[in-house]
Image (cartoon, rainbow, N blue to C red; front, side, top):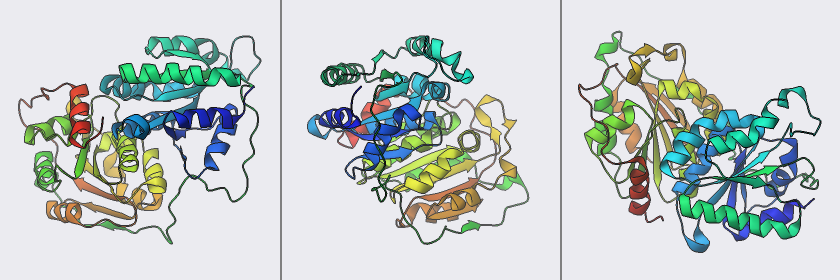
Length: 394
């Protein structure tokens, strides 16, 4: 058994200062220790996939040597199911490394609750199938440094995750003191009010996604703004409007663009970060709204382009017409929230100065996309490298 301090301080020496995840009783000592150190950051996520995406955003922020930004995603092994999509189509595809600490509930031979009876035996096989190298979490102080060195060597060489699988009783208890610095939540006197503008009666009278993306390109300077586009036609259309080095086009990982953008915005407060979301993606990970509302910094903007359908898969309807995303964002703690079908209002929103927290806008657009829309000719990993190099990250 080791102390939480021993692992966290050894990890800090190797650049790990960001932690995100969903609690498990095995992880409690780490979470408590990190929460009580104001120089470290722990973000409590709505689900394990969002934690992986957020730490991927920290990695996207770059850094090298002593300034390298490293992060840890923490989860119970039952949460691996929630993290499969970003682990296989975000971190693997874009080569965005992170350390995974996965608790081993239901380990064969160790009595546990019935819900872990299947996940316990298959946890190692799941990691192997996802091509994530792993080893047992160290239980002796002398094993901590070598384990972390193996993890960081793999991360640096491949750009992909490495996992430590934690057995029961690996870490001694660590109490959470009253008045601990906490997770860095922003304090605001009252929630923002959502601004709901009148909708046109005919959806076909609304602007197109291409119209909206032209405004985005015109109002996001390449020198100071990172634009992250959701998977599907959103990223493809943005690339077709203008392929710029400050843009990243998501592939797979539906719904993960917002926690990815949050991670980048936290890691790089010098940049303005714009997350371009879609209605299907937003509905898949509504918990990300609460996370952004709690932790989102002033340099983060969240623009939802809502056409009411899954456009890239044939136009199947989503349930977004029954959902007030602006009111959700306001209730979750965004500093401002706008819903409109007026492209002029979005232009003003894009140009507006920062507030004391993240800003949200939903633009109602019409379905449809240009005929023969091309795919980006640049590979995802090269899109990532180009963006990082553009903003001076390595």
